[in-house]
Image (cartoon, rainbow, N blue to C red; front, side):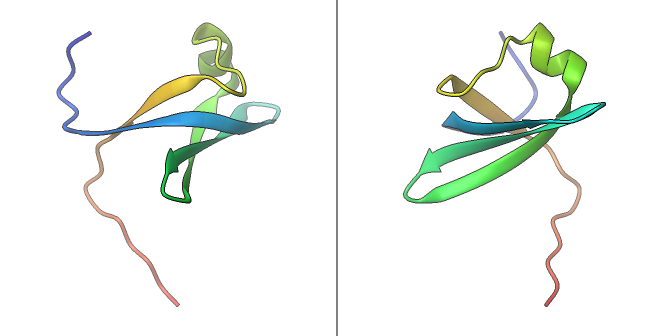
Length: 68
């Protein structure tokens, strides 16, 4: 599959918190770095994502902000 996303990180699904409409999927990308992705429950089912799966995070953002 070709994509325009240039920021791609491979990782393993470590946890899924399924909600009423969206799910939080936690992914370990190595070096003790864990990221989360919020996707619809429909997408979770369509992609058949489960704990232990190897996935690719596709990141396209206009801004990433942090505050303390």
